[in-house]
Length: 128
Image 1 (tube, rainbow, N blue to C red):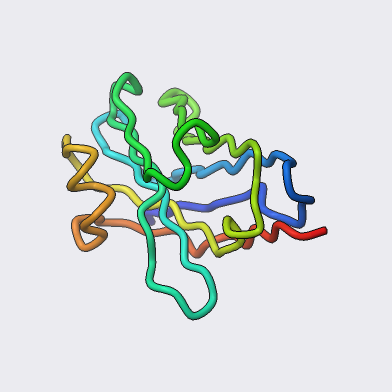
Image 2 (spheres, one colour):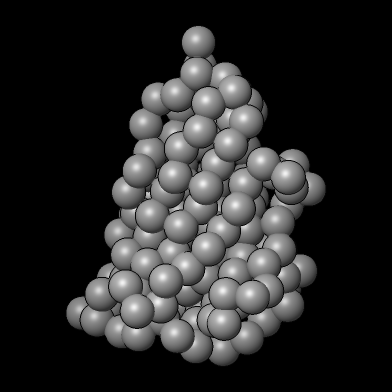
């Protein structure tokens, strides 16, 4: 069974850091583009970051550039999202998703319908 499972969410104070993990099972992620998306209460889903299979190409939403960093370990079938300088506006449920093949960062971030597989999400709350 093909699955993505996110972990690492929680409550953090403004300015703090969290690292989310997205572990795949049932398939190899080597040739998958992996996206991180988030949805805050009452808001539309937003693409946060995308990372291509080689791990060399990443793209980010303007709202997180310079604060969030995506990385991947294909051998461990895991993708990470390091989130620094967290703000209350980052509070949301974060999802990882995967699509086979290579897509531009723009397409990945703006068209979530491209994704083949989705995790169930993990809650990140930034609050003092």
